[in-house]
Length: 299
Image 1 (cartoon, rainbow, N blue to C red):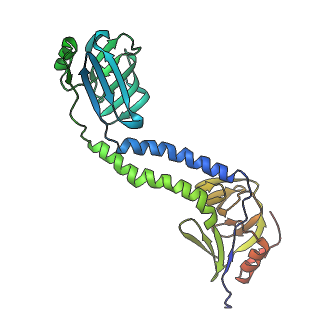
Image 2 (cartoon, helix red, strand yellow; image 1 turned 90 degrees about the vertical axis):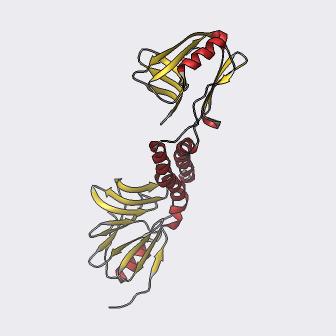
Image 3 (tube, rainbow, N blue to C red; image 1 turned 135 degrees about the horizontal axis):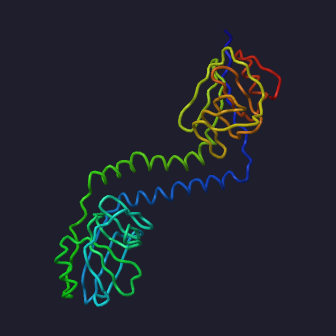
């Protein structure tokens, strides 16, 4: 068998003016919600209820996710224990052991709360507050007495103790959410630069973002091809970088392309492989030297 030197081919340039814009937008769309989830997972939820100078202070959370209300004791018209049913978060934070913000419940409607998410809560109605306020102090009797007496004091629950569910959430963020989020900007900006095609030792070698795919060339046929239809079944499809299992013109194919609907080279065989080298003629010539039968057609 004749030995032919390895040849490397660059992918067809993606000249779309929107490639960078879409990459930035995609990164923002993924990073922002992940940053919010990570901030919640690694923050220590705090709940505080204090009476100072005739005012009830309700504090929940910290920083970006803080919730706060200050209510004059003289404005409180009702304070009683209620059992919540059919809760729904409208706007706020709902995590194991920490529910803060605006919620809605059957029989009560919309409320504002800073609670530990239990069903039996204290409900306060006050002048100047459009919504009922829900709280869960550690001693309901002592809390109601303090509201009546107006005596200063800290009626907050004990510091937050993470539950097993909270720990699982943190582990998932560290092991799954953050790596997945970091992969998106890496893939969007770096993957197109990594894409390469090598013809060597009777194989087509495709350099992807983090690994290589190898396809034996023996018995294959190659031709120029411009897909009319292509949709992804599994894999990545980012601006300038399409890699994975696709349906190309109604038939399954492995696609490793910089532009999905541009002229490239289709290698028939098992599996079918579609690539988009910048120089299809030189690429086909290299395949021919490695025993691939080339067909002079574009469809």
